[in-house]
Amino acid sequence: MRNIWIVCQKELRSYFVSPIAYILIIMFAVIFGWFFWNTVGAFIFYSMEGQMRGEMFPMNVNEWVIRRVLENMNVIGLFFIPIMTMRLFAEEKRNGTIELLATSPIKDGEVILGKWLASVILYAAMLFLTGLNFIYLFKYGNPDWKPMLVGYLGMLLQAAGMLAIGTFISTLTKNQIIAGAATFGVCILIFVLGWVSGYRSGTWADVLTYMSVTSHMDSFAKGVIDTKDAVYYLSVIFLGLFFTARSLESLRWRA
Image 1: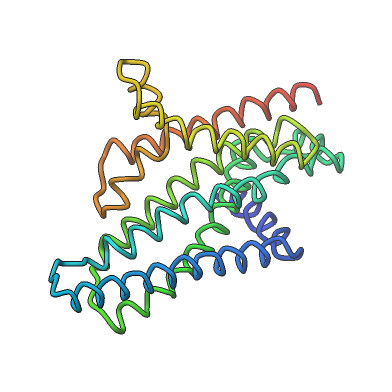
Image 2: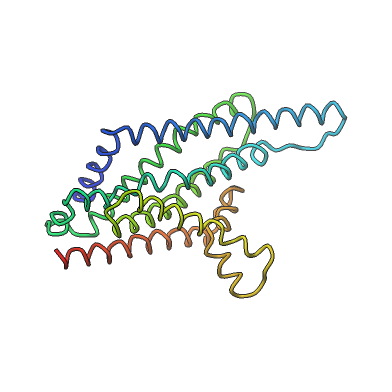
């Protein structure tokens, strides 16, 4: 654990000594804020319009605001994840330090977990700052905080899985742009696999739908922790880190 934390601290410092972390956090917060305040504005508008027309249909804050904002930001997060992972190992290759890393006494698993954990912590920090927007809802309304926390947990698990995939792709090239573009492409593909269920049925369609991250986020967005969805995200994390270990192992042998 000590070596993992040392590697993690090193990666976190590399994020924050450059503008990368600050730009990511600020842009994510700004985009989140834009979605949040527009969604709140729409919620207030339709509530007042319904009251003026005498239509007293219930409008749930969790369903109309929190769930919609988290679902939208789930998509936006796909644009940030490649930027966070593209440099993890590609930069080591470009600088020629990957050989030193491969022949160091630190185990491959410790290096991988340290780098991946740093990216997860950075993403968690981004999510934490966006949560400050919801203080407004608790000040002027009475939303249920439990579904909100479950939704954030789902976003973090999904991001952790995509970050693990990005970590693996980063070991395949020394070009950060290629690593970022490939990670973005894979993340988008995994995100849209579930679309096939809209017009096809059968075993293969069910398999592709299950492989899609969107089909497993629905329950979290509703505030429900489903075991199969949690297992799916943990499996994606495991497979991403497993393939990263195999890729790094091949580099160690070549070194």
